[in-house]
Image (cartoon, rainbow, N blue to C red; front, side, top):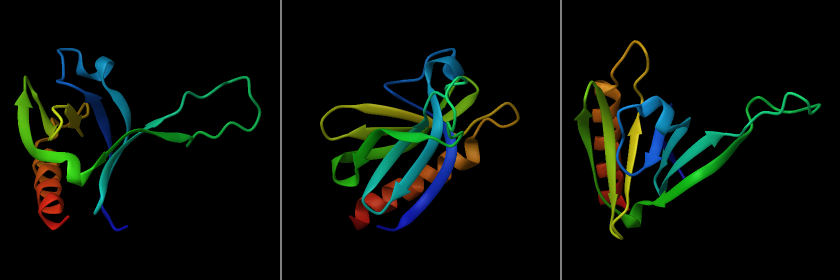
Amino acid sequence: MNILYVSEGYFCEGEVGKDWQLNMQYGKILLTDQEISLVKKSKISLTEIGTSVDDFHKDYQIPLTKVKKAYSFKQRKIYTVIIETRDGYIFSLTMADDKSHGKKKSVELSELINAAIINS
């Protein structure tokens, strides 16, 4: 399994709403030659001893064989990557933050996903 892209960002199933930072999960977006993994940071307990700050778990795993298409889309001020699956699900991803609207990264990621779909 080759890693094609890794970034921190926001993601959710469905379309992004007005308060995108509150409605989306924050974590890592990982694209390999086999799947797209959306990995969120686990909740950290302040009372447990030895809790890791980098405790992640996979929220969504989308095999590339199930992806119909991916494209960059501007919603209000932020740019998102919309992933449509063959079974009718939609996922939204963004690498936007307080300083950037995520345009460059969303275009790059959508192109990489589409190239990976063709190669899979």
